[in-house]
Amino acid sequence: MMPDLGKYAIEVLSAYAASLTLLAALIYLTLRRGRAARRALAEIEAETKANG
Image (cartoon, rainbow, N blue to C red; front, side, top):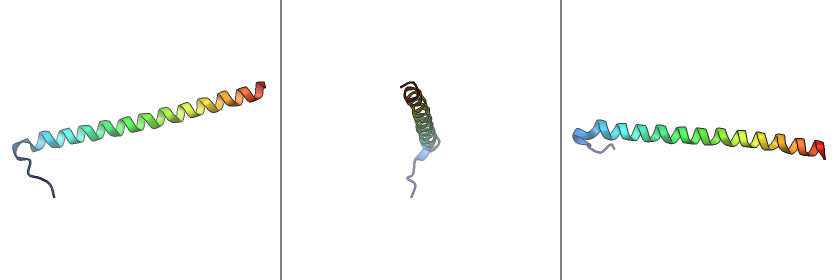
């Protein structure tokens, strides 16, 4: 299943691992910021409704 990477196997696999780690971190941060923005918007909307 795994291709023969020869003498560059460690470098290639390290690059894949680093890429996947960075991608996972970006997804996590995006979701976290989205939740924070949604929460802030809900607070502003509630404040606006309360103030009329």
